[in-house]
Length: 181
Image 1 (cartoon, rainbow, N blue to C red):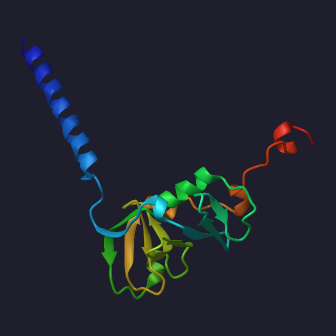
Image 2 (tube, rainbow, N blue to C red):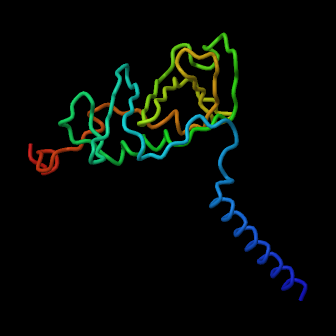
C-alpha cells in the first residue's frame, strides 16, 4: 500500500514538473539571462557575411525571400544551410561582459577567427569571433574596434565553415548525379 501511494505521489510530481517546464518554455523563461546583443526575427535579416579560409562570403535576400551570393547571383544556393546560418543571428545574449580589455589576445580577438556581419532594414551588426572557452561553453566576441568582450553561447561561433562551392546546389542531371563520367 505504501509503495502504491509513493508511486502515485511521484507520478503527480512528474506531471506537475512537466507542466511547469512547458509553461516556462512557452513564456520564454528558459532564455539565457544576460545582456541581449541581438533579438531579431530571421525574416528581417536582409544581408549577411562571414569569413572562411581567408575569404569573405556575402549573401543577400531577394524580394522573393531567396538567398543569393552577392558575388555571383546566378548560383543556386542551398537555402536551408543559409537559413541555418541566418538563424544564429536572431537571438544573441552575452552571458558575461568584460569591459576595458587591453589585451584582446587572451580572448582570441587580436586576430579573430571570423567576422560576422548582418543587416536588417533598421540596423547593422558586426562581431569578431575569438576563442572558444570549453569550460563555459562560450565563444568570445566583440564589435570591431571595441574594447568590450562578450561571452556568448557556442552556436554563434560555429556553422560558418563553408566556401561558396560548399553552399552551391548541384545542377539536376549533372554527371555526378546520374553516375555518368
